[in-house]
Length: 92
Image (cartoon, rainbow, N blue to C red; front, side, top):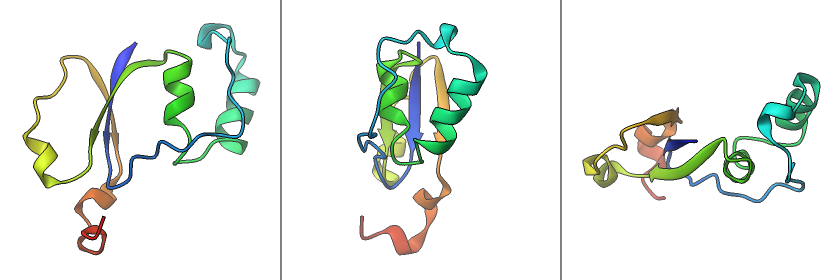
């Protein structure tokens, strides 16, 4: 899997109530995937299941301006939450 580059003031690494462990993402039907991602997961709980299913093999988190200096991975999917730029999020 690719690296997930998560740009956010929050890690969004909350544990979901349920995992689809043992499932190969290629074997999931669209209805099961839709139900799970839309009704069981949320913006704070989607990363751990994606890693568990090997949709992403690694996670890089950019959670502040200093982290923008990090070298980017070669092959990544970008997950950008624009609150990274919000002044009212500076306390995090």
